Structure formats: structure tokens, C-alpha cells
Length: 426
Image (cartoon, rainbow, N blue to C red; front, side, top):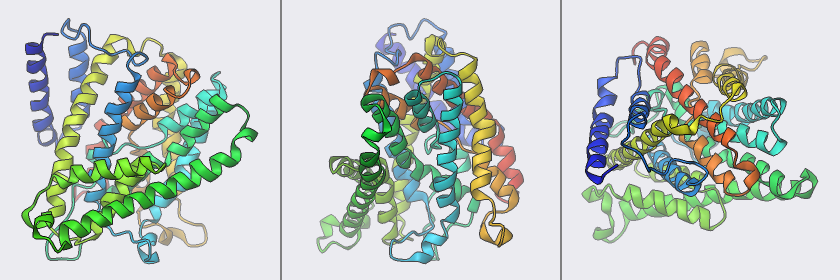
């Protein structure tokens, strides 16, 4: 592809990314569906000849591109959530009960179920666990149709009124980081062998220490930046007063870097940083400005990822796909995730419906709309760089198929289902 033609294709695709969200708002079709389709059409032309699309040969580039898309999305999600969460206030923790249940019950069940299906399909234990861990987290990048719109600001009490969208958004914000310990199970199993050799290390470091470090790093960075932006004694440092919204980029890069340097999970650091920053001056208009920057950058990165994914689909990415990958991908979307979500959100037997802030129809919708996407590609690319046994063409084909199937199925059903569950919002 010549440079001039590349500009034409990228410019036309960027125009699509700008106009599609509003254009398709009332139709049973999503912007990610269209962008993947455009990428596939481009892949059928001679234009992309010579593009580096082989995931095995370009693993590092895929890892860093998806990594950046995720951390930008996590910053936007953290700023968009209106419901407070304070470490020293137990009452705020209780209002996130649906999120905790999806993370503590639904995600491990999903990982275990997919790993068992993979093992039954003939995969090695490490590969089966990696498949489960990579496909477990829901995606903050491609799930905009079922997430909260953005931060509320102004002179009123700010809280989240849409329980369904809040639950899906907060789950996506947290499970990208919390899936990492299970990815490390696959990596350790592939590199160190028997579980007895590393079980204590995994529990102590990968499951506990790295999560705590990631959360604390994000909390400190978010609090410090919020103090500087809103309350610094130096007027030049109080960037909130003059609306310098590019602080969003500084915050996401700094929090991710600090979390990773200290040995924690950077994804958690970014999300917690955004939440901590939002907790300061919760109703301030500055949060909306920062969220807009993160949202626009996320749209650009999503455009790039989806176009490349679409091109790769028609350029050999699915060559290793077989009936096992198709069955596992569809089982995850149509059976495993919905069942795990329903089980996680089910009311406690002795207290009935009072234990859940979601209605029965909202619980079903929450359980179903576990969109898979960029996070799954990132985890696979990361693990593939740790051991050759985890870098299989079949894994790439299966994950790519599952992501595209999720984009299509959830994209078609998002508008009508969300409108039915919440007619006023729809």
C-alpha cells in the first residue's frame, strides 16, 4: 500500500469512526461491527499487500497496540463511573455488590469452564488455562453500547442511576487487571512445570501482592494528581481551573508506569487512578473534559485495532480455526458467560430479590452482555512472548473468532435488548 492510498483509507475509516456511533444509535448494528467489516473488505483488495499481519511475527507490536488501547479505555471508564467507592467507607463497597459478585464468582467460573472445554478438546493444560484466562475478561473498549455514557457534573448529588450499565462498566474496568493472575497460572505451568513448584509464589505474589501494589499505586497517583489539579497552592499547577484536559493522558501513562515499575498490575493502577481522581471534586466539569479526551483517543485506537483485525481475518488469521475453536467460542458467548453471570448475580436464598440491586431482566442482560475484545488479544500476545508453547496459531484463530463473534452477536442485540430492559433509556 502506498503512503497516499494509506492516507485515503485511514481518513475514510476515521470518518466512519466519527459518524457511526450517532448514525447507528437506533439500529441493531454497532460501530465495531462496521469497522471490522470495513477491515475485511480492505483485506480482500490488493491494497494491504506487505502489511505486517502475522501475529507470530508481530507479537510485540500487537501486544503494545492492544495494551495502549486498554489503558486508555480504562481511564475513560474510571472517569465515567459516577458511583463513589471509598476504601474507608464500607457503605460504598456494598453498593458495588453486583460487580464484586461477577468478579469473584462469575470470572473464575468462566475461566474454569473454558479451560475444561479446552482440555477436553485436546489442549495441553497450560494452553487450556491460557485460553480460559484470555477469554474471561469483558472488554472496556468494544462495549460502549452497554456502558455508562460519561461523568455527570454540576451542582447536584452525583451517583449512578442505571444499575445495569453501571455493573457492566465497572466489571469491565476491573476484570482486565484481575484476569492477569490466571494468565500467570498458564505461564508458570508452561515454564516451571508442576503446580507444587510455584503454588505459594503464585498465591503470595501474583494473586495478592501484585493486585495490592497495582491498587495502591493507582490510588496514590490519582490522589496526588487530584490535589495538584484542584488544590495546589500554585495557580499554574491548578490545571482544573483552566480546563487543561490533557492531564488525562498524563494520568493514565503515569499510573500505568508506576504500577508496572513497582511490580503491580498496571491495568488496575490506571482504573484506580481514574476513580481516585474522580473522587476529588466529584461534580466538577473538569472530569467531563478529561473523559472526552480519553474517549476520543480510545476511538482512534479502537479504529486502528478493528481495522487491522478485519484485514487480518481475510489475510489468513483464521486459517488454523477448526470446529473446536468455533464450539468453544460460541459456548463462551451463548452458554458459559450467561450461566456464570446468572449464578453470580442470583439472589441469596434466604433473602430473595432484596440481595440484588438488579431486576430479574437486568440480571439476565448483565449475564449475557459480556463483550469479548481487545483484552483477550492482549493477554494472548503477552503470554505468547513468555513461552513458545503458548504461541499457537490455533489460539490466535480461536481468540480472533470469539472476538468477532462477540462483536456481531452482542452488537446486533445490544440496542433492542437494552431498550427492552430499560424502555425509558432506550
